[in-house]
Length: 367
Ligand code: THG
Image (cartoon, rainbow, N blue to C red; front, side):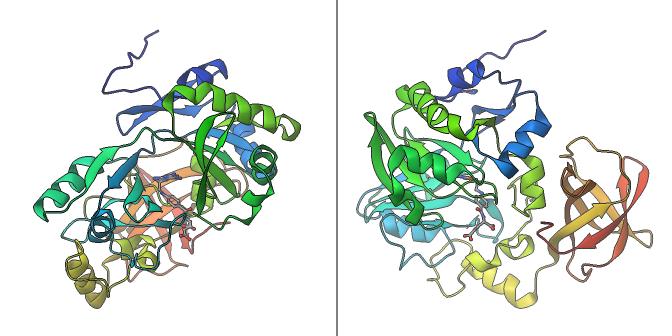
């Protein structure tokens, strides 16, 4: 047996004690925090997201807050997506890129006010990046990590659970839109969002001392719907074609390669970081594209996070990024980041540690 020592490098989430009480059995690290990755019953946890409602500690999705007169300018400089029509209470999925047009994070941007934004980040340090850019551009904006921790409620019954807590107005929230409110004196922002395609909400807890209290309120409201604990689910998200930055991207990946082209606006101003590179990439055509791969065989694989070569006619054409056993398709499926001239429908071979596994490429999403 061994134990993990929480520290400044491995910060527990405000929901840590609650997840331990639920019987969490594994964690990963993300943004220098611990995130639950399972409660010991993977199948049950999966079907709960598909058929019922599941609650997830996703406090690791930290909020990088931009506050001050130039907050909006900084947000627009960081994100190659037109934010000019983004209003208070609206969120947008954005591909933060470096100067070469490579994605360095894929956060949801939330506009709280003209002078206050959050970047709800994936697992890379955007605090330093945003601060450096703000200083270099001489902007009047404070960049901090806010005391804000999302708790996701996901699945077809999530809306009923969240409506029973906050009222029917949540049913009218549009995707990624949110509203600030409070429940039992706990300040939260309620958003329609979450890393699944089964529908759901995220409650952004705005007071880290109230994690257990919020967890228990959701759990109680969810009892009639058989709520239970879960976590961002590898199987569901691959079936649904949702991208994992760092899992399905490398340090060369641009938005056009990984189905994020729809979230890029090439006509934003020239001072937006990476926009010149993105225009060039778009014109030349991206080198790779992300499509699906269905592997032959009926033996469930372990969830796979290391990349495997994808080979056609003896030549490497790309990589199998993350892959997983699909409970609904009863096949091993994964994402294929392959040469842009290889279309869906192509038969290939995955070189899985020396084992040649036949696979066929297809469109995303799988389901
Ligand atoms: N919730 C919050 N913050 C986050 C995530 C989250 N930050 C990091 C990471 N997850 C961001 N990644 C994604 C990726 C995809 C989606 C959401 C977060 C998503 N995409 C839909 C799609 O691709 O079909 C819809 C996108 C759209 O139409 O705009 O939902 O989970 N707080």
